[in-house]
Length: 118
View 1 (cartoon, rainbow, N blue to C red):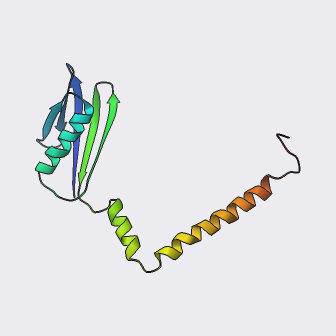
View 2 (tube, rainbow, N blue to C red):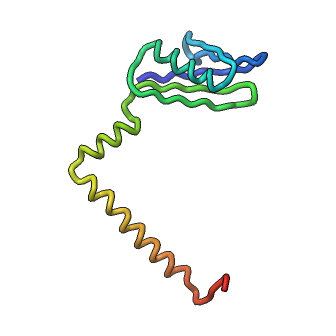
View 3 (cartoon, one colour):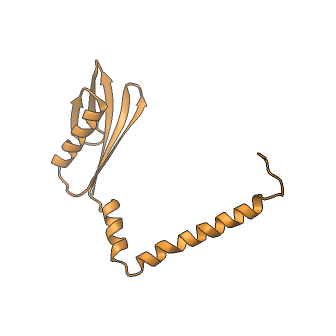
């Protein structure tokens, strides 16, 4: 699993990014394009598997981008694990019964014998 963190700055209408602890960098005209380029740069640096990326503005002219490659903790891994277990369907039905019980008890608690809107 590889985690790449980039410090991003906007100067003169162009966004530039430099890796926090490393030599990777990229630039683009928008944060969207910069995020895409940083994913490509991180993938070319090595690593395989699923990719997650996030971009957060810290100020109007600076931000942080993080790219995570690999790890196997994505949505697909969770779904495959749930499907492989023998009683997956039964455990999914149990919370629905609990929800019904909670709704019934909430209705009983909130009924004081008068109608607020009637």
